[in-house]
Amino acid sequence: MNKIMEGLYSLLYLILILTILFSLHTQIAHKLLIGHHPLHLKKSPHLPLRFSSDGTFKILQVADMHYGTGVLTSCKDVLASEFHYCSDLNTTHFLKRIIEAEKPDFIAFTGDNIFGSSTPDAAESLLRAFAPAMESGLPWAAVLGNHDQESTMTRLELMSFISLLDYSVSQTNPSVEDASSAAKGDTITDIDGFGNYNLRVYGAPGSHLANRTVLDLFFLDSGDREVVQGVRTYGWIKESQLRWLHGVSKGYQDRKEDCHLLEEASPSAAPTHCALAFFHIPIPEIRQLYYQKIIGQFQEGVACSSVNSGVLQTLVSMGDVKAVFMGHDHKNDFCGNLEGIWFCYGGGFGYHAYGRAGWSRRARIILAELEKGEKSWMGMERIRTWKRLDDEKLSKLDEQVLWELHHAK
Image (cartoon, rainbow, N blue to C red; front, side, top):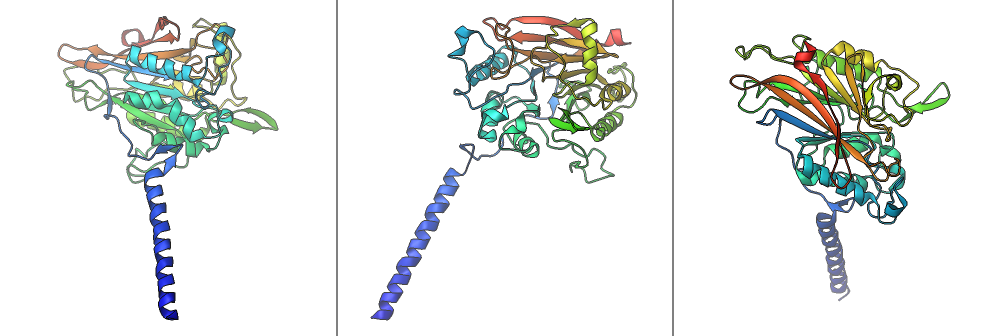
């Protein structure tokens, strides 16, 4: 009898254990969450990036969203009449409006995407901040600013997470382009920062450049904060990053002239590329533009590193970068030229970011245009930019040409 009872107890105990395990399995299988969102397979955009059939490639630059937690995160530097109903949702609404109005081909987020100290969950904030981009189905990419890592994720974790989001083409580290030095598809780890990578934009469909790179987009991690000789300063783009950047550019170019295929009759000839660069913290030389002609407004001091690592000299020596787009200083929205390269601020986008009351939040649009040949689209002809304000009419202002083929010859 005792043996029967012992056997019964053992059976009941086993059933209890199995029931608990089954319950845990069910919960894990159906409720495994990151930031309260179910895990799912990443949705990928149509690749490669390429110019449209109308010969254009439009980029929306979003600088400094400073996203917090959503509806409970209040706005900064807005009119008193706007404050009580203003939150991160205003940032979300602006992003949705500008995507719908401008219909970009690509979105570039240039750092301080979230304001780390205002959120207890970095992953949740990233999901909410980038939600309109993911919902649009457009390819998008991001770099980090100096505030993104101030919550619950390191810079490596942030970029890894961002690279896994729907329609993101962001990368944590650059891919190895030279198959002789490593297996193709591997990533470079001997480089400072996280979020250094390049994206290639191919020619228009049906043209002889449809399978060739026409425009390169370089993304760089400008860091956050560092201490130099006992003094705290902002981060900067390091020598290893510049070495990688110069190497990639050099490998892409067959000749350093104009970004154009001069003879349509020679489709086998490889065109030289144009390139654009995106990073968060401005370089020290931007301060020189206070005394030069600019397009836009210079309303605050340039908050850059005390270290000048030679970014400008590297870009000039490369020859293909025609314009650089940055953020960080929210009240600056100007473009200015340094040694033949245009440097443009995006202007503050987010409502939880500091700004100026009565001065509308804004976004920058960049339009790359191909030259029309007798039979098909050719190489790059022009790069234009303008800004859109988050006002009733999404006002357009400060449209300008950054680079034009025939003026560059």
